[in-house]
Amino acid sequence: MNTREYIELENTYVANIYHPLEVVLERGEGVWVYDVEGKRYLDCLSAYSAVSQGHCHPRIVQALVEQAHRVTLTSRAFFNDQLGLFAKELCDLLGYDMMLPMNSGAEAVEVAVKTARKWGYEVKGVPDNQAEIIVCEGNFHGRTTTVISFSSEPKYKRHFGPLTPGFKFVPFGDKRALMDAVTPNTVAFLVEPIQGENGINVPPPGYLKFAETLCRRENVLLMADEIQVGLGRTGKMLCSEHDNVRPDVVILGKALSGGVYPVSAVLADRPILGLYKPGDHGSTFGGNPLGAAVARAALRVLVEERLAENAAVQGAYLMERLKRIESPYIKEVRGRGLLIGVEVTPEAGGARRFCEELARRGILAKETHGTVIRLAPPLIIKREQVDFIADTLEAVFHDIERQDQRVREPVLVAA
Ligand SMILES: *Cc1c(COP(=O)(O)O)cnc(C)c1O
Image: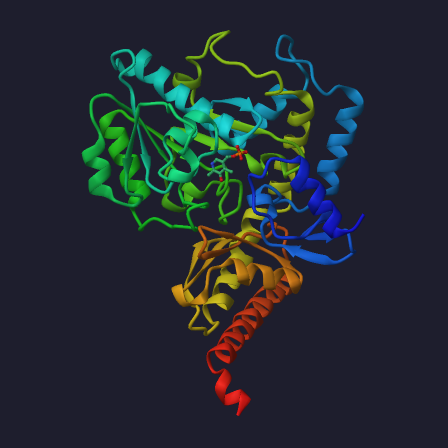
């Protein structure tokens, strides 16, 4: 089968919820992926930051295979010999008392919402069914019915109502609005330390610290969605560390398993997660030994290969190179570590054509919010590969500018 046939097959039998670049991948290794025609690409999306450890990392794959030969799923009707070790290693690494394991990111966000409400009623003393959670405009926390209920993106919600109540919006980065939104019934402030899907938006300095101080004072849980920005992506183990903030609740997913298997988790201290009793929540696959063994290996790789440090070094270098590109089509380059957004100007005709041209030249990136080219390569990336990204991006901008100029001045050429 060729590229066209694979695409037609997917388009025929799979519900059309994405708008993929027309590349059909069949293999990955480290920072590279290969399509069915044998063409190689540097992966600058890393499956939305899930493949931070690089594709098919040998140690993570080995853990998967070994555990697959032992036992994969026991359900939590019984104990297994991997979950406790995974939980302890994760809690020790990030400095929390306990965790609750799930599978997808959205499920972990659901757990965070349930946890905040439960804590609000049982500890803070909020009257039943009155709990409020503050969220930010432009947030992305996943796609379940409750999670889209507090999205500000109309497209995520249209025709999916009735939606879950109990959420209040504030503009991301606005301290005053956050302060004004708190009421005696507020149980949590849920925030992405950097908004990834909304275009790599970094909040103003001091914003997260302010939120932490406010939450402490008002007896509100600070819940950080670190699914995309956590685990080394921005140059620290948690993105919140840049602001010297310790969230009450941390939500992880994506790179927690290095992209090998869906594993997510919610972390908090005992006064919060200790409120759960048998029957309060559950998941057939959550905490299964296969996922736990994979996540243990993925965390070991993050720590032993010093991937957060590499993300800081290579990210700073990539940022510096991108900021040097002179183009009327670049509005702003922003981000932290290896999560970088290049926003194009309105005249540039959207980010997608740049991503398509990058793919032609061997770099896979995906536009976000129509106008931002997201660069989030695996954290194992080396300097010469960063140069390849920067050189290629620069060439793409200059070539597209030149093309557009020719279209605008056809008469001169004809004469
Ligand atoms: C990807 C993502 C999610 C949802 O994770 P899924 O595994 O796709 O459900 C939630 N929050 C953030 C910040 C994300 O980037």
